Image (tube, rainbow, N blue to C red; front, side, top):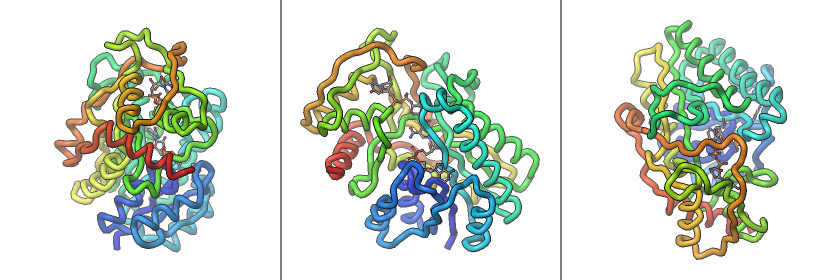
Length: 337
Ligand code: NAD
Ligand code: WQD
């Protein structure tokens, strides 16, 4: 069995990727200290894959504990590194916490990979590195902007760190995946997103509002230079996103190292906030109180992916649409009752 270390594997995207890795015949080994997830996610994964995934409750910054994982579970065929903090606003308030966790954990991991001769890594990066692109859809050749948050900067640093490591070590094989806006849940509704506290992201806020947990949704601005005035994003179903990690690992297996390639993961299609709201209501029949409020600081007007490279090189493309993702998000939310 090809064992794959999945850091942050109990999280939103990590748990869906664990499921897809298992379906593809890999043996995922989850490392997560559950700081932003819950143990019951492991039950959800088990109910889909039919067995319990190996799990270590470990902080990825703890070099000794991580050394034990590598020593007892290895050799690893590869690593998929999700573990990080991800809230843009929180990163502005607590930058050091973000730098320490997001960058520190990758340093620990890369040192252990070198010590244990693990050569393949897939990193979670983000479309946030593009800021507001000059050209849409944005492809991987667009220049990185000055990061507009400490979170965004941690992703730029992690990407650069991996480029440098691949350059210095001719045996390393790296894939950097820039996710656009992941939404939805597994169609079984056994796993999904578990935001702590008030959600920052649009879709969990929508589903919680429709479920009566929040009073109403505020649409952040309808005076942008877009067809309906609200912001445009590329919402991608989390199951499609998870499958891209399997494709990336498979691709690395056939690549001559050193390799360090970056791929956009999006649908290629932009949807406005008001379109998402209307589609959610149409697909689910749920009541969704909302009103238009002021712009949210730091939001860009529009960003959506040119994902041609992932299609041509990895053989991956998004298959599920916004409607399916919103239906799955709602089914998951309803199951949480
Ligand atoms: P998440 O918070 O659901 O998952 C992250 C997981 O990592 C959590 O289970 C958390 O407990 C764990 N974790 C964090 N720090 C850890 C540490 N030091 N040691 C052990 N476990 C730790 O987030 P997610 O949405 O699944 O995001 C996964 C990755 O994808 C992150 O790197 C994030 O930056 C990136 N990303 C997410 C989005 C998004 O919108 N969700 C978009 C682009 C990129
Ligand atoms: C989507 C749209 C909001 C909430 C963030 C990170 C990005 C990536 C994905 C990690 C925006 C609008 C939202 C609400 C609203 N994450 N909105 N009312 O900001 O595109 O991206 O998550 O890497 O880096 O920045 O996602 O879901 O917060 O917002 O109107 O209550 O929904 O203005 O246009 P965003 P989001």
